[in-house]
Every structure is written in C-alpha cells, then in structure tokens.
Image (cartoon, rainbow, N blue to C red; front, side, top):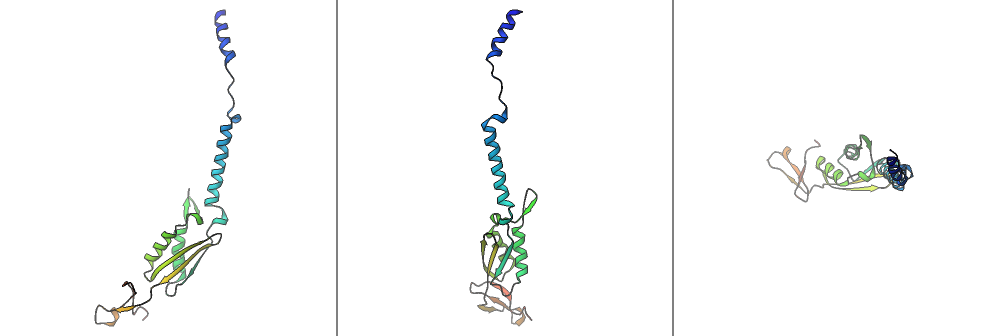
Length: 159
C-alpha cells in the first residue's frame, strides 16, 4: 500500500489551492459594472430632477387646456417594472402630438418642446376658417373649412 501513498502525494503536492471568487478581479469588475448600470437605470427613470413636473399649453383658443393637458399626461405616465414614472427621457413627443391631433380636430399642428428640468411645452396651432361649406340648403348643416380643405367644425356649434 505504500506505493499508492507515494503516487498520490506527488499529485497533491502539485495542486494549487483554489482562490476565492472574492479575490478575483473579474468578480469586482462585474460588481462595479452592475452598480453603474443600476445607478444609470435609476437616474434615467426615477431621479426626481428628470421627472416631468408641468405641462404648459399655449395657442389654444377654442379647446380647453385641461382636456389637452389630461390627454398629454396619459402619454407621459409610464410604468417600468410595475413602478410609475414620468421621465423626460421616455416622453415620446410624436405620440403626444398624434394623440392630441386625433382627439381635437380643431388643432392643425402641435409643437412639443421638452424643457429640461422643468416640463413640457405644447404650442397648439388651431385651424382658422377659410370658407363655409353647406351641403344642404338648410343653414344648420354648414361647416367651416380651413385653407387645406379640411372640414373641422360646425358653423353653428355655438348656437
């Protein structure tokens, strides 16, 4: 049996003890990158300075600011991992513009501007009447037409 011990002892002598994972550089680089990614995620989505606080609306005469603002807030409020946020980085200006244009036919164009560390500014350009279109001889069926030929409002909606 003595020959077995000598054979095993020579192999055991050449084995190096395994290093702990905490002493390896790769582990600490991975932890550092993970912390940096988590910090960037927090800054991007949840840091209070980058949250939309206000929506200012200008240029609207016939549409109410409250209804435009409510529609814009629906597009701004988002959820990430089940947590709501209003990050200025994730605001989609084209989506806000398209939703307001489809909801309000009187709006001809909308300019959406992100104001960093403040909020969002919406500049509404409303349609101006160019002509009156009456398909019937009755006066109650008349509509306003803008310069592009779009029928957008009843001419007798106020009465």
